[in-house]
Length: 148
Image (cartoon, rainbow, N blue to C red):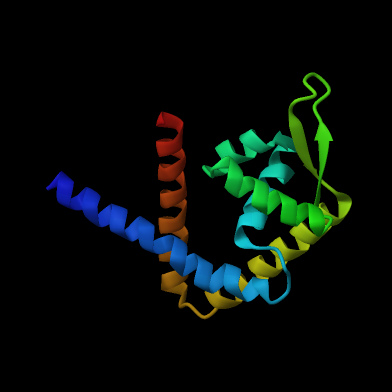
């Protein structure tokens, strides 16, 4: 019985990302040229201030070559900048520019507003169910990550 439940849970969780992408990220792309990968990088930098390329890859579970492509595009757009690590010149750190921080916050706000508009289409009962379920999923995923 547990194996069947685990299989169903895995399928459900894997279905969430594409559904969120369709409803959140895609509409926001019309307002910005930041890719979803770029949003994840900007969000990590917002949280941690400065990260090396390897650390960005670890935060996002992305291979370093993929991170490099995303960061290079963000540098071209003026959202992030490279700097040498003060303790080890071999390490290149990445940090948000003022433009990157501002545009990231604006895009995050636009995505949030878009989501709120969609949530307002739900009934009160659906909103309550989603509130409880989303908090539970978030808490459980945080618990899973703390065990890894």
